[in-house]
Length: 256
Image (cartoon, rainbow, N blue to C red; front, side, top):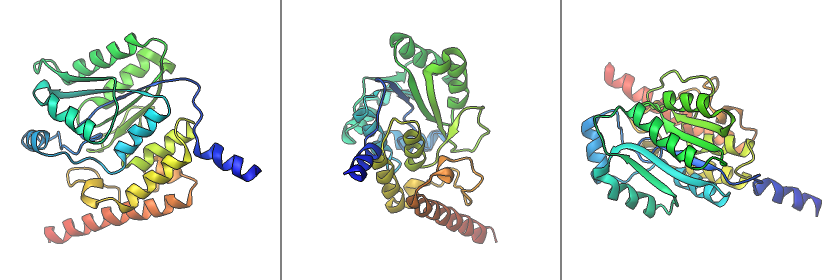
């Protein structure tokens, strides 16, 4: 009976109160390649591919009591496409903000848009999640300075593997996020195990699109996965390194 109780406590997260999740869309949830304007435009209108396991992470946050807002620098022209994507993956959200003034810098726009959400919810802390193709690392670092302890965690997918500001957590798969969120007590072991399955069984080209950084060695990468105390983490690490070493080998063979 005691073992059963312990297992239940591990599987079910315990949150002190509701919190916000404020997320980017492109190259965070959706595979876009926003660093390439032509490909990003094509993917924005005609593609709906997402990183394996990421929709499940957003649904797990919702189940834990989180209120989700999406803030993207994409133009309002594709708002219907973004809403369709979120609806297709059954991701609930309280707000979706797209950039209406394309002359405004992405950094200034995101600071203003996310700051507005935080100011409108003064009693809620927030988890931020984005990528390093645009200004998310700098935006998140600035928001951490402005709002202090209210920013619970800031995740950035290192698509270009830019150097991240201090306090920003890199992630390359849903498993990274699940591991870190379980450690923080917001998500449970069940979400972590599901994320592991999604990574192990996920399509290699969707897990690591050709434009994204692919770690051939997880050890020393700073990713939460390398410190995960689970047997499944070994399988996840093997899967990541296998994909990335295969890609590197293919690139080297072409160069010769």
